[in-house]
Amino acid sequence: MAALLAAASLHAAPREKSVVVSPEIRATISAGDEVALLVRPLPGESLDAFARRLTDDPKSKRQIRAANGGIPHLKPGRFVRVPYRLLASSYRKIAMEALFPADRATAAGWEHRVTALSGKPESLWRIAEWFTGAGTRYKDIRAEGAIASLETRTGQVVLVPGRLLMQPFREAVAAAAPAPESEAPRLEFGEDAQGRYAIYRLKKGEALYSAVVVRFTGRLHAEDVNAKAAEIAERNGIPDVHAMPVGFPVKIPVADLSPEFRPPDDPERIEQEKARLEAAQFANTVRSADLSGVTLVLDAGHGGRDTGAIVDGLEEAAYVYDIACRVERLVRGRTKARVVPTIGRDAPCAGPQAETVADFRSARVLTTPPYAIEDAAVGVNFRWYLANSIYKNVRKSGGQEDRTVFLSLHADSLHPAVRGTMIYVPGEKFLNDSYGKTGEPYQSRREVRETPRVSFSRKEKIESEGISTDLAEHIVAAFRSADLPLHAFEPVRRNVIRGGREWVPAILRYNRIPARVLVEICNLNNPDDRRLLRTRAYRERVAGALVGALIDFYGGTATVAGVPAAGTSR
Ligand SMILES: [Zn+2]
Image (cartoon, rainbow, N blue to C red; front, side, top):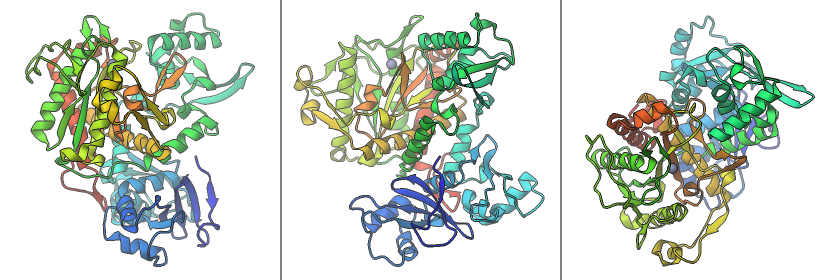
């Protein structure tokens, strides 16, 4: 976490403290608990564009000017102060998270830890203003929390109930809400002759595979999970992995832990937190409640000779195609979005009532000319080339770049203890600067000749991680409210971890659509997931939740003074 520093060098106000969020953004708090973001304009950005990016109100331009000594226009490289009340709610959340890193979202609401950054404990009024948008709501916060005194004290935890929160805080609460087992478990750290470790005590009914390896090391595939479980058992002097008693203090090497579970001073954890804060500033701010102007590039994974995973006679390609058909029907019926599939086949989509899924062998990627899927890897390359071409030409079809979404549907085959939906987003640090294919069969497709090589700037990579994560979190919230099973510990992932390597799936890696996710609907190796996937009801609900998430992503995020805009579906 970024350290607090006295910001005398930045702006001269005394007692002002600031936190570096990214090279472009600092959060500050000054005497009287006035919060602001100091933001460096993007290259060539006008004051108008700057105000549109940072705030929800076009009239805020004048007030930004006033807050910066009446500057007529922006100077490149020079920080601009945007007072908290002008900020769009997603930026307010960035400011709060930077200034108050000990705050956290729980199932009940937002827990704010009183920190007295400006020298005096912040008042309930200020807390209400920051998190709900209206200081007057201090009464509700006080009543619900049975808070005895109006005076707060440093270290006190004030709970702002979920229903009062501004949208981005409320979303974080919704994401934290679920399954009690996903509450961040407490780890103790220690060191012995074999190095640094964390201790986790197994609870009743917990197994080393899921409660320790899947949760704390991020491994998911059976061979990785089993190998790591055996290693950890050996490290603990336990000959039988299955024989760990309840309460046993399992030592997990710190180097095996996912960064978020490492000690707060761990360099990888610090780096990851910085990267996430940086990406978080690029949450989606485009509103289009009926999805007009939105283009959904819909990719059903596999097809043709590429069956995807096959478990117990259940073929991934057939089932994800069925869900894609349902998504397409619901989007066309409920919204004004345009759906562009990456895959076509001879058999028409089965109707909404169909229990069985239709043939997928004739599936081809809809490049020009189409590619009948012979080779799975070539098929994936053609999908992202096609997606990039759709994106590049989106205006010709009446769409807009910032209203384009890429959704790839798959089903995983992981350790059988893992279940539920997981969503991959393009983690910035796993993306290439530049990539392209040459020769046949690529050269004969129009989409490849149009843009043979794809390249990304650092800003584009960070932006796509941020926007895609925002989209993924909307999907998580929609699945949660539809009561659909989600991966218990970390449903949104920035990379695959397998066999000691880490990467972003190719379909996301070379894709230029900023808002892009790969949804692993469920785990085919888990019997409960398989049973669900075979039912029409589940597939229809999954499709409904995906479409609901898309509507929320574009429609439900406008917040003015803590009041959700009309059209929100929450
Ligand atoms: Zn797949």
